Picture 1 (cartoon, rainbow, N blue to C red):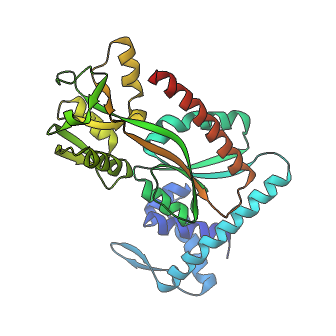
Picture 2 (picture 1 turned 135 degrees about the vertical axis):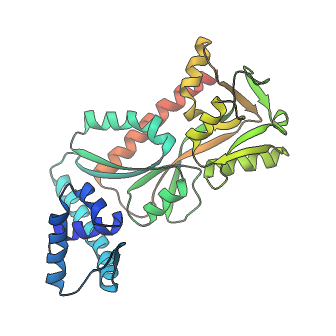
Picture 3 (picture 1 turned 90 degrees about the horizontal axis):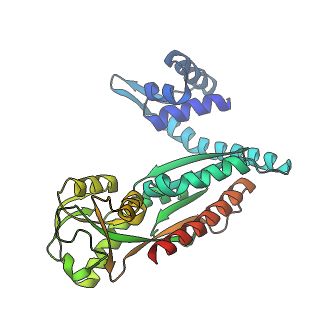
Length: 310
């Protein structure tokens, strides 16, 4: 059994079929089929049930898939240990981030890593839902995660990197457009484009409104924050959105060019952007270096936010 064969096998399983797996592996379908056939012949058992609608794992295939995860994790750790013998910073960092962090915060960190530690390689999982990312971390598919308001878990260490203000956003024609601050009581009965409460950020907003005793009318609810913003832009309603999504709006406001209005809410509303790592597991040099860069950039980000608030 060869690692390349196992890699092909895992790709077929994870991508749900041979055709999709060929794109990931950059091989032809006949070449991929050959590798799987060789693996099945060596094991003397079928790993897939092949049907007109696609393939599914046999019991033997499920067992092999479970064990292959540990095999590749051992290989990854071995490679990391060998790289560290050289004294430099090298190896892979497997990172999970929510979309806003991936779009607005992470690029600066990656740029710094590329310049200062070119022998490192970062694999990024970007999702809307913090809970999905945390599940991947718990299954050991990631080394660390940067998410919003993570759920509690004793196995994990949570470190708050940023407190990202959540602001009231509306279009140019709305009566509250241009206000520096909007009181929570003024939100009552407005036509809201809501962030789904299934997302941590949506849950934070829902709890805030409940604490303030404010009832809003939600015309649309979405788990896509970019879509929420777009719907506000076309005048379908107002929203509460994290400032991380509103960098351009804040910049346009300074120039007096903003179409969308960005207003602080009173009392203040924030979401916590947290770094999540394993509590007991040791980090490779590459991962610990990446964490240090994340912390450094978070400090710079906080300084910028502080000057904006003044």
